[in-house]
Length: 87
Image 1 (tube, helix red, strand yellow):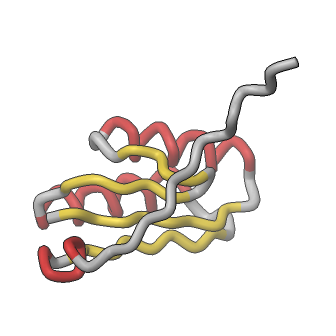
Image 2: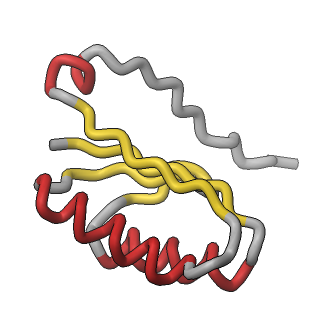
């Protein structure tokens, strides 16, 4: 099941460690604080437990959204790459 994970974390070190955990679970970074990828339900729970452990008592907001196939297929994306400057 595709999952979207987003977070808002003030502490730079914690934010970087949580990004590493997301990458370890095979998620792809789609924005600075957003990751996307397939996760089985047991991996979703495991990932959130690891993130909670890394965050510790620091303030933060981490949200994981499992996306059903119907919602995934209905997504809309605009992805434009910057043109190389020639001149």
